[in-house]
Image (cartoon, rainbow over the protein chains, first blue to last red):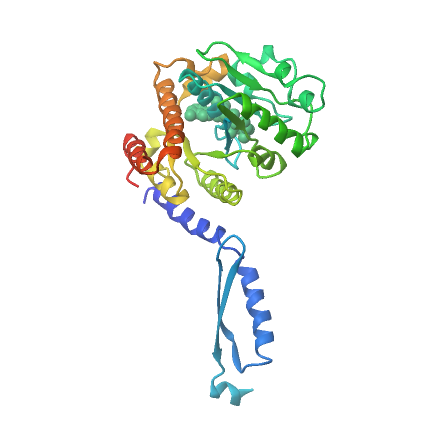
Length: 78
Length: 267
Ligand SMILES: Nc1ncnc2c1ncn2[C@@H]1O[C@H](COP(=O)(O)OP(=O)(O)OP(=O)(O)O)[C@@H](O)[C@H]1O
Ligand SMILES: [Mg+2]
């Protein structure tokens, strides 16, 4: 493959990451902290949290989080 | 009220100064009154590329400190039909030596006197860059077909967008046609697709650019030459875009199609 194509692919990947509001590292921290708080109130699986953050407009962010209930099997394990 | 346009890139050495000088001249060949501001304080070059370094008496900091008037500091290049002016940077100061408000005041008074104020930004995204874009209404982002330049351009575009600078145009500089044929560089079409802003021009890698800088004779003065013609075309696109932006946006569509066709671009 000519290197121009490789460069284009790599750029598309890296730039879409660059444009994300938070780094993958800080997303991980956010998930962990959210999980810690929410698990005090709801019976959730802390490893299965999905979050998306969007800039709604100039002044607002939209943060949505999806939590899964803890499965029975895991309850027994703990 | 004139248009203030910042010419910027993030990455250094991609051709900002070359493009500012020659675009300024081409705009003036079209009859517009043009002033260029060398905002690369401490690393003054625009005067040299223009070939008017010997005419420089004062610089931007002399004006902001009240040591001379703005009029005194403007260097006039009379080789063009309509004279082009340059407000030189200081070579012995640092970017931070000029206050934001003083810089804004200068750009404001230049906008009152000239139709185009072209601001040659320093590389980077620090104080000097922020100063250069602060009072711009439009932006031109210069990019080379090379991965780090393209990534940096994307970053700069997002900063300009945050500051509501619009439109932001793309100029792709130093396209090596041999490498393009062999597909060993990112093509202009792909660069535009990645960065997703309107394309103003594609400039080939050409040793004549270096020769004209060596001689202090900007190629835009040779309107018959390949590069001179190209820059005249770019200047026309830039200035007509402005006209119809005021009128309506339907024409915008067709004009951009024309620009793209002229570079045989798809998107
Ligand atoms: N299309 C081109 N073909 C060949 N050489 C070019 C071309 N464009 C620019 N150059 C050369 O590249 C060098 C850097 O150009 P220039 O000084 O305009 O870049 P710059 O972006 O202003 O740099 P800086 O970030 O240092 O201000 C110069 O030697 C110039 O002559
Ligand atoms: Mg420069």
